Structure formats: structure tokens, C-alpha cells
Amino acid sequence: MFADIIGQEKVKKHLIDSAKSGRVPHAQLFCGKEGTGKLGLAIAYAQYLSCKHPTDSDSCGVCPSCLKFRNLAHPDLHFVFPIVKKDNETCDDYLKQFRESVTNDHYLTNSTWLNEISNETKKGKIYDSESDKIIKKLSMKSYEGGYKFMIIWQPESMDVGTANKILKIIEEPPAKTLMILVSNEPDRIIGTILSRTQRVNVPPVERDKIESYVKEQYQESDDDAKYIARVAAGSIVAARNAAESNSANKQHFEDFKFLMRTTWGIRNFSTLDKKGDALIDLRKFAETMAKNSRNHQIEFLQYAQRMIRENFIYNFHNEDLNYLAPFEKDFSKKFSPFINEGNVIGISTCLGEAEKSIAQNGQSKIIFTDLALKMIMLLKTN
Ligand SMILES: [Zn+2]
Image (cartoon, rainbow, N blue to C red):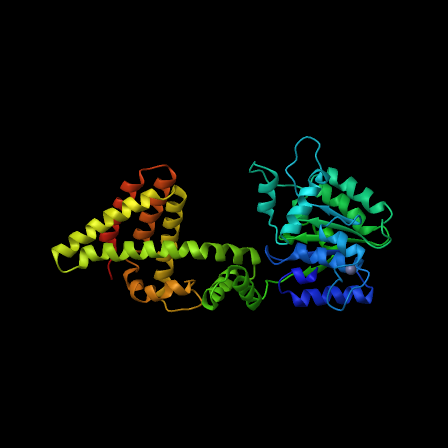
């Protein structure tokens, strides 16, 4: 249903208006960035057009047709999507899984889908064998007397031959059929298809809608939700990733702060005693860090690289350029002057090399000790 899709009120209104006016273009191309809800909108649109008692804003959700849409098993709703083919497989062999995955998550991404169906790193494709099936399915009578829908997810993954066959159906559509192409990258679709489909642009999701979403789903504070919505740049998928890494980042931040303060102290503390304590602290830091999983260590080092970058940028005092989380900002006020033209490259390189060594199964304790020693030399104001 439209209610399952976050924000996008303008697109929803446009689709509902077209349904109510009875002027539904028979081939439409939904395009927009990943995470904007295109596939969900296409399905909600089909559900609305099939619904027996639609309201002004959504399907009824309870009529026989809507019930079949709940698990995407309406007999007049067809899907074509990329697969990694083995033997003579077609989309139909993956249909059950596709319906389940999309029912679970209207924001299913290409990479999540391919990970689900294949353990190879191959790219997914819509193969030539699908085009005959599409023609066959659409030329059959509709089961329920209404529209037949063909939703083609990621038409950019068809090669030219397949696309040309599909073009024929678009040019001479059987009665009461609606083809919806759902694309992240319309630039990769052949021009003849582009020119024969009605384009529906699905813009980035409104920032305030993403804010409420992460507050509700991840119990983020107002400030954190604002930050996440900004980083997400209109994508629900990016917002989820940012919300999920936000709590992990808080741990990395504490470690980062500790490492920076301690290495700074070794050079700057006034007494030998204090310097000695700081050295012991650094050794402990390396020992504790080495006990974490290798993945955690790598994530920490990536996080540290981001912090160095952001603190360098912080010096320019331009809010638009900066992507620091609220909990990171306070620290940066004092820390940022220590990251400057003189050392930003050196520090980033050290962190990057440490990351690489950890990934290649180097000895973590030595790598982190070594990193801390280099940092003592590098951390200074201009
Ligand atoms: Zn209904």
C-alpha cells in the first residue's frame, strides 16, 4: 500500500490522480536513486488500480484483491528482475523468494537481492529468455478481469537484444496491461524504450520524513536523527546504514578520542611521570584493541580516517562541508587545529596502512603500537 512507503506524497498523489482519471499510461518508467521507494510505489500503484474499494489516498487493504497483494501473490501481478542464472533458470524459479524479500522490505536493493540468491560476486542480469515469457504472460487473459501488471525491476540489466523484444510489447501492448519499469540508472536503458515510456521521477525522500523514520525505528535522539537524515541524502537505505553504524561509531569515537589525547599527551605533558603513564596507556590501548575482532579493528581504522578528514574540513568552518555527528562535534572544536595541511596526509596514510596490515592478518598489537608512536610525531598544530 502507499502507506508502506515513506514520504513521496507528490508521487503518490500523481499516481492516484492518474488512476482516478482513468488515464493510465500503459508503459511507465519509475526512476530515482536507490532507497527512494520506487519498487514499493510501483507495487502500491498496481494494488491501487486493482483495489475494489480504493479511497482518495490509498487502497482499502482488505478487499480480496488487496489481500492477494499482501504477499504479492495476485495472479495478474508479474515480476521480472535480475538473477544470476544457473542452467535454464528464469525469474519464475526465483519468484517465491523475490516475493518474500520484497514483502519483507520494500526498499530491497540490488546488492542485497543478489547476495540472497547467489554466493558468487557475479552481476545479476535480466536474460533473453525472459522476453518470451513476458510476451506470453501479457497476452493471456487477466485472471481477475482487471489490469495485468508487469513490473520490470532494474531494466538496465537487460542487454540490447532483450530490450528490443520488450520494446515490441511496449509498442503494441495487449489490452489492459500496465508495464512499470523501475530503474536506478535510466541512463543505461536504450533510447527507444526511454522515448516510449512515461517517466515518473521519484525524488529523494523528504528529510523530515527520514528524521521521523529513524527516530521511530532506531530510537535516535532529535540531534542524531537530524544528522542521520542529512547523511542519508534522501535514501531510506542510507539512513538505515547510518543509524546502524551510529551506535558502533560511538564506541569507535571513544577509542579515537583516547588514542588522540594520549598520543598528544606524550609530547605535551609537563612531567616525565605523566608522559610515562601515557605510554603505559598506549600499550594497554594496543592490547585491548588487538582483542577485538579483525573486522572491528578495520572499522575503527576506517572511522579514524573519516574523523581525520572531517576534522581537517572542520577548520574551514563551513557547515555545508562538514558531516560530523552531534556527539563528535564538541571534541572537534578543540581537536581540529591539530589536523592541518602539514600532517593530514601523513596521518591518513598511517591509518590507511594500519588498516591494510590488519586486513592482511598482520599482528594487531604491533600494528597499533606502531601507529600510536607515529601519531606522537605527527600530531601537532601548524
Ligand atoms: Zn482493496
